[in-house]
Amino acid sequence: MVKKGGFIVSIVPRPEPAELEKHGIRGTFISVEPNADELAEIGKLIDQKKIKVIVSHTFPLSEAIKAQEQIATGHTRGKVVLKVADEPK
Image (cartoon, rainbow, N blue to C red; front, side, top):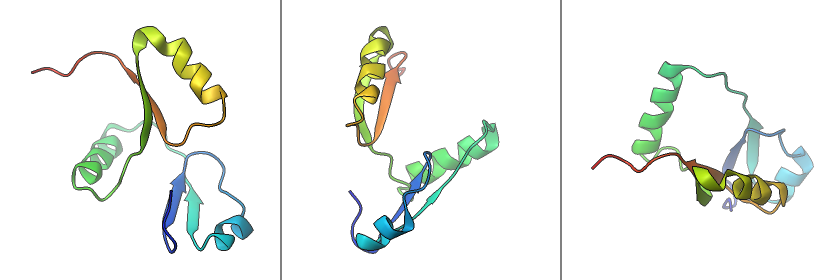
């Protein structure tokens, strides 16, 4: 959900400009190669609430197949997360 005048950043191909304009939003596509410094910077931006990550589903690693099935439905909005381990206390 993006409010009118909002901006989306996608890791899948950019939506059609006409579709963006129809909804009064702007958008772009990015492609990222693994880079520790850049990932750390992204983490900081998330912590500072400058970037909002939308998580739609979280699955334990043991349910990775279910996670993939959820993605395959094409009805997932946001990220599907595989939880590898509990966070340390």
